[in-house]
Amino acid sequence: MNADQHSTDPENGVFFMRVEFLVEDGVDRDKFALEFFEATKRFNPQWSLYDKSQIMRMGILVSKPGHCLVDLLYLWRSGELRVEIPFVASNYEAHRQLVEQFKVPFYFIPADKSDRKEAELLQLASRSTDFLVLARYMQVLSNDFLNSYGKDIINIHHGFLPSFKGPSPYRQALDKGVKIIGATAHFVTGNLDEGPIISQAVVQITHRDSLDGLVRKGKNLEKHALSDAVFSYVDRRIIRFADKTIVF
Image (cartoon, rainbow, N blue to C red; front, side, top):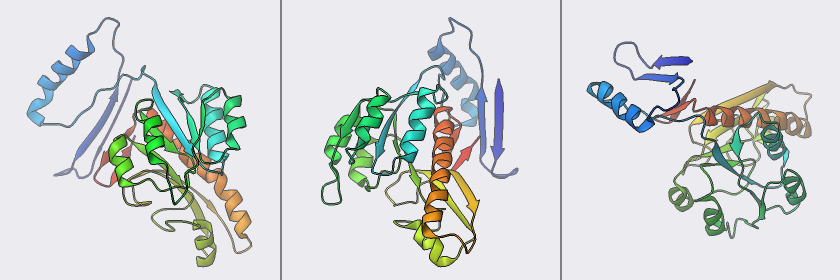
């Protein structure tokens, strides 16, 4: 159906390929994978085989800002985002009414800097999800949590990485007088705001923009960048390589 490829260098680089194809009913997928391995093993490739008919389970963590949460729930209910959402967990109780309107289980877990409630989050997420999305979740997850969970986590950062890391990126942007602001969706790693970048969105600004104006414009960027990243992930269009991503 589709084939994409990329090489980091035509002579001695790393070659990437993504092929999407149809399999006839009755084909033994395990046998197919074995035959593929036998046919390609002389190249010693790193490869994965996925069944796109299997819907992934996406858990959502969110704090008070709710715009990314609303966007993901809308895309899911409309059928555009083909995932299961086993839960939304938040340290902001007021999201309960919204989430339950979508008939998605909601868990209030009052995490803060002094107690991040990671044991509760891990118990909730470890068996019920294939990946997590931090839809403006304002708590830093520890290395212990990341190692114990052991699956991919996608975060939306309200700034244009690698610039303006950490808190208040719009204030940082305003103070620096930049002419473009952005939002960045990336994989979570043990280094804050330094995981491989998946998707970014930007908009031009001027000296007339206030901090409130940057925040308002940034919310749309955050929704766009995060949904793009999630769509790419569930479509299996992302290959992680070193500290970067190849997104077909």
